Image (tube, rainbow, N blue to C red; front, side, top):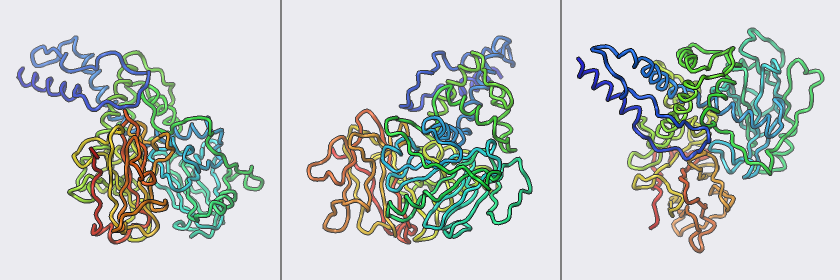
Length: 491
């Protein structure tokens, strides 16, 4: 019996102390103390010794905190980004933020570098029911709750069919709300995300269309305050990503104060209660809780990196013999299947990205988008900013509209912030083509001579990954008759 308990103790010690790849995101708020470990557990016969009880509780709290870190990734990402809107950009709940330039988008998780974004975070606690007026025009957008579940589609694929209309967002606390002449959107969370893109390539058309969008409280519909269009400050660097260390838990605690607790989350709320995170109470962890939370954020992020960048999900490869993963691994924007909620799929996607919709996971040729991600070279090594790589894009890529490949910093999961001030190559750019119609792309610290148009600059000392996007993926994408090779190191 003693041997059995000794084996179990050692087994769990190995699990907890096994070192994953260290995150490259640094934070001064790091734990200096050793992680509680079951290797310290002393047994008194078949029972833990009296002095070991506290170590077991520390270990239990640490394990639960690491899983709570993974659970909170989508809501913490939105909550942090919302604070950037409010505090860094000085945008209100009823304003629109226009992300138009390369610098504008540097702080967004895996942003598209080719088309502008228009976004807003709407606080229904402050506003009550809130109106969004969309003008007629070519737009694609939608609404997401703060767990990043799609709540409604707006624009050409929405109920207004691009003809324009008035939507009213209804808080989860308000039932049976009615308003004639509006599209009613019941919301699952108090805080909501609204974002859209204009589909016309003419920037002047985009500018005029955005000016016509209005956001205001339904109670002020007779005389609404004009909606402002705000741009991120050109002189400030910012990141709308999950913070590290104790700041992660501060942000989680703050947003949980406003949001309803769903049945699926009640166990997580019980775990967090043991760590000083509780609805209706201030966040004031004692020293023991703080050390565990800091260590859990570090270990949880290491788990998130492995879960995102080295996906272990079934059928995750688009071509089984290549390194290209499906980025969109959730089976549905609801994050729910018949028998379980997609905890690990959700954690994987929302560590490295934000927003999710049916249009982003289309199964119908020639509409929507398709996303593939690569984190390794053809030999299975992480993509290294100090090395040179090449990628061949065969002729006739399967995209009705256009394709693009975008480079991201692995530490921030945002656009690579390089001196070149460029993170993407696409069919919309003047690329050098080969005689067979294929295109050779290059990634590395220095451009190969004569290939500057086909090059993205990477940074020594930093890893990177990439997304390949197909806008309007064709049948050749779905039947895999068009095939792309892996990224290869150039020695």
